[in-house]
Length: 192
Image (cartoon, rainbow, N blue to C red):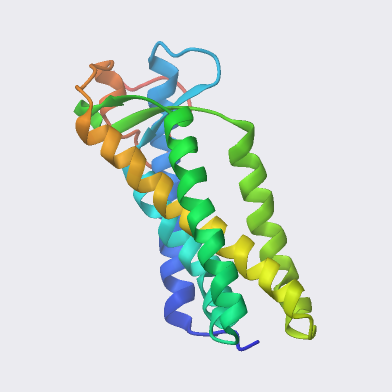
């Protein structure tokens, strides 16, 4: 399988991961000051928008490589994509709790399914090298279907969450949660 060693893709991935880590930090700080039910967390909406980009960069090349080899792989990818839209819709319905428009954030509920899909992404990326050396159409078709499911699920989930955010009335949040924390973080008490 031809792996793209484009430095530009690597840079985009690193930049996206740095941005996401900064946004996750902001969401955690917002979550501390908010009244949330167990298993809920606040996340900036931008994380939801970046998630499909990360999935595309991580497994998009694998999907493209597999579907360009055979029409059987294309059919498996189409089936995986249809399932991905359905899973994305269900995950968005389960995860989305409410919008916090003052900070362009959302309250999400954790689910076991999200951890399973992350494990599947890691497994797909790990098996990519061994798939290159197999001649089994069935094995490659299964991987094409699962990779497409994971990719389309991320895109669909993001789209459905953004749609629900746009349709939701805004909910107020604590004013202290609206500001980004100082960077680098200060240790000790705030200066007076």
